[in-house]
Image (cartoon, rainbow, N blue to C red):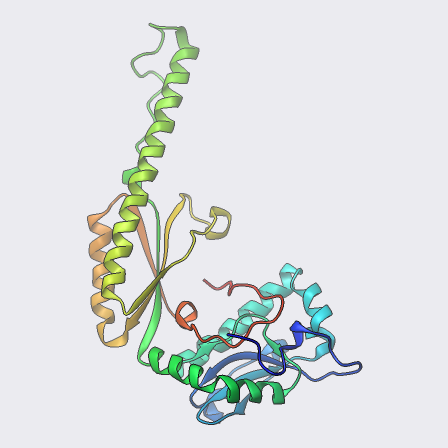
Length: 286
């Protein structure tokens, strides 16, 4: 989206002495007080509703001494602060999503005051409403695929044929190592091809699909490389069919180990995001 008449606080200078600020979590059709009363926002404070015409923005207090442009830039480089902020933001969005469709704001979208949030709803209301219509009755599901055991043949034993007859033990080791690397490359190629087939089948079943870049193993924590990081928007009425398809594909393609995650708020399919500030990070909960 293009910027609003008043940009988020992180996108420009903050007025001297200002200490207001609103961290935007997301936009919904309606937010019952009982729902909002059970949600904890940024800094452990409450969340509140900023109403528009047929829409409600859900925000937390975000004092600009901590969430203004310069403090926010420093905080986003603090991994402890960032992890805490990302978790809180996601928990609010997830709570809203359990009650109905939500357009989640990007992480660290901070407005100077409620007036800026209200102008967002007025100027982008039609697009946000259309996105909510598209997401209603649907949830996002993730399917991650990792190189499976069938794509990782066991290493040749130390005493395999071809040892000392030609070049001695050193040459035999090099041949064995070369064969292992070749087998690994072929296995990963087979897993990547299986992942593409799986994604194609799931995308054909889902309402919409998006293939994210695979996560690094340091982030995924998996013992083998990720070859599929897919997101799928699924009608609630057809969810059982989708999960059955994932299970069937897992059995059909042992080269890739599939992991189903969700339901998630529709981060990957909320095309009409509220505008992001100058420095934002992708939602880390995925």
